[in-house]
Image 1 (cartoon, rainbow, N blue to C red):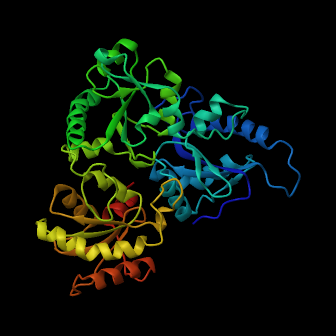
Image 2 (cartoon, one colour):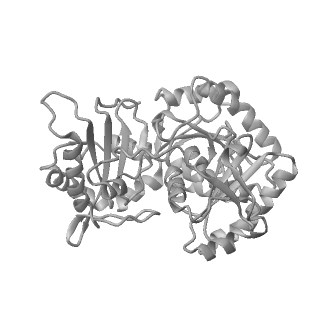
Image 3 (tube, rainbow, N blue to C red):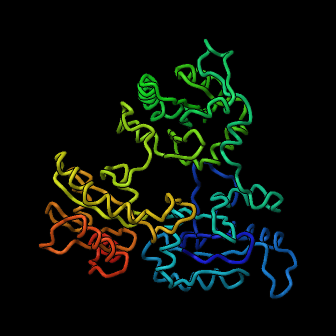
Amino acid sequence: MMMMMEAEVVIVVVLVASKGPGSGFSAKNSFVEPEGPSSCDDFTRHLLDLYANINGEVAQGCARPFEVVHVLLCKRVQDALDLDEIFRSHMAELPWLAVPSDDYERKMKLTRRYRVKAGVPMLILLEGAGGMVLTREGVERTLADPNGLNFPWKPPHPQLTLEDGPLLSCRRSDSNKSKLYKELRYCYKGIYFSAYWCPPCRSFTPQLIETYQRIRERGQNFEIIFVSIDRSDESYKNYANMMPWFTIPFVEKERRQKLIKAFDIQAIPTVVIVDPDDNIITFDGRIEVLEDPEGFNFPWGSRLVNILTEKYATSLHDAPAIILFVEGEDSDIQFGESVLLPAVEIYRRDRPAYDPNYDDPDDTLQFYIALDSQTTEILREFVGLDDAVPLLTVIDIPRGIYAVMEDGVEITVDSVQQFVDDYKNDKLPTKKIAAVHKTVKSD
């Protein structure tokens, strides 16, 4: 785990270098577009003012109320040749700390740990003592509150916002019906962010309704709360009228905006599934509905070993994974689970559930069974693996390396455990992932 500073709040600034016209830096807007400076240089001036306002006059040798760690990344690989010059020029007059421009390994760890997206400047606020993320919307918060009156802008727990007012029935015929959120405390809940103007939303809503009804027909306590991102009351009413669940009233715009921020919604449609105690089970409710329309695996909690599908493929870019490639028969899946589960249980015995806001992906392992599928074929080609099965591998895309169990070794509970232990202790001979390193060279 990373050691945190003594400051009450640490700000991690991730700016992206790009040699563009008129400026050495570029910025892109997020899902909720903020109004403000169009470049990282412009924003840095705002951050300097905030830094001075919050810290004030601090005696020499005393910890500041908050610190800044500046991480300068390349937007394009070819810019790396000039990164040192850009770094020195940009940091020359800034009063805070920075990760050295040539410390590529540490910058890679930070981008993985805080899920930094390529080409998107970020300002992430952390608690100084434990490193918990306070907010990922530091840019928007700084521009909206330049004097830091509400600093550090920790968003309220979603439960508080959900409880802050009634929930109305979506359908006009039941418009007089309402509930309080606390009346749903024994239910699993789906928080559905959607809008009528969004074609994928309109396409997905009927599918969600069918899955919702099938789950409830089996006697499971499940309710959905619609959070509208519509642009007019008329569109909202027409859209909500087709839904058989509850909604946050459209007139309560501030309440809806708080939920968007509290759940860090970046795209729609999104379905967040929470348990009766309001713990988040998954942000991928939409994908779960599409892959499990009958809801047989509801409430779609994480499993120790998952079948590698397109849903999980993107997570391979976040943390290393132990992947067992098999043909795809039921007996192959049973075999895979029988040899992987003991290793997973030992690995997680003393570990809490993975928290992307706190845990370092370098300390995290994912476990998958890869069947014969298009997703598996693409992964094999990307890494540079042949078609052999069964094949036990560890694939670490962020570091650009992989390892394969030695030829001739039988895949058993004991050999899998030894393979995992050797990887954790850096004893496995690794190879470079061809596609990753080829891309770096060609760029």
